[in-house]
Image (cartoon, rainbow, N blue to C red; front, side, top):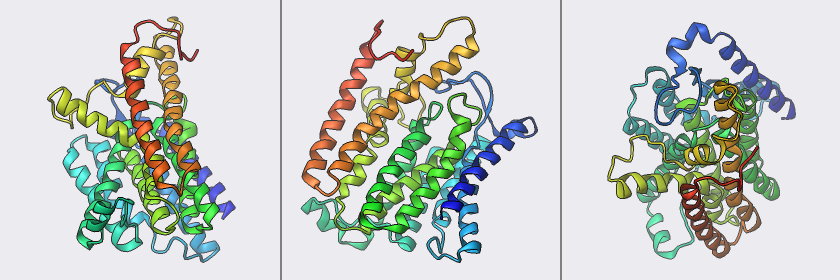
Length: 362
């Protein structure tokens, strides 16, 4: 298994290198423009980083089938992820796939994961809700909705170099730790293969942003994280359902807050892009002005890279109590509420900042 992880990392990193090296041949299809309210890079950049990650996962599976004849990935969970990944990749290339169609693909992937891989949400440790979740159709709808929601959440937080990819790795490491603790080798292997595949992309994406995840990559990572979060609970009754929620607190809260901000506070379509995400505010308020002005290009790249660590910390503040209280629903519920209040407080503090040296990374 260790060899497959090493080769998977190398495969992912090498494929990213090839995409970057020969981007002049495919940039007319794959490049992400630097223009727009959510664009914080200086030049057009390949946004198909999901391809090396997906192909690395496939490579690892094939390697294990050939070398070890293992059935740990049989049938591969990649089949469930394919509709969502393909739809996201089509958006990366054509720029014409609507949000509703991508969410529909995410919903379909969630249904496949539920039906064929037993990734089922059947309890939230809340009596009234659990009664409804005993119904098969409600359970499958709720599970697919949750998986689609987290998948979309990763696409929302994918705004700066290394942000979504590192958050995904942090969450998968937390799930891996609990899987190792409980002896769940399947979830451990599935998490480990995704971590090394993301890491191969990460070394090219952070700090300089030579390649981006794109919608395909962000959706794919989000789907995998969501499915692993469901599986660790479904396969291990001692793990509280709220462990899955709290480990994903940052992308979930960011998404819910975005929907509230756009639809209720601003009265706009929640699907329209804006520059008021938490990561966008941190860029403008805390990192944008900390680089010398001798090079505009260098300043933008440096400020972009300085933004993500703030959110890595914010994400970890949800993961840490989840790891500590992984089997205690009451404590995880309290931690979730405290995290929500902390996020709102931080958001307001950053919005109100005008000229402060506090928390500035130099």
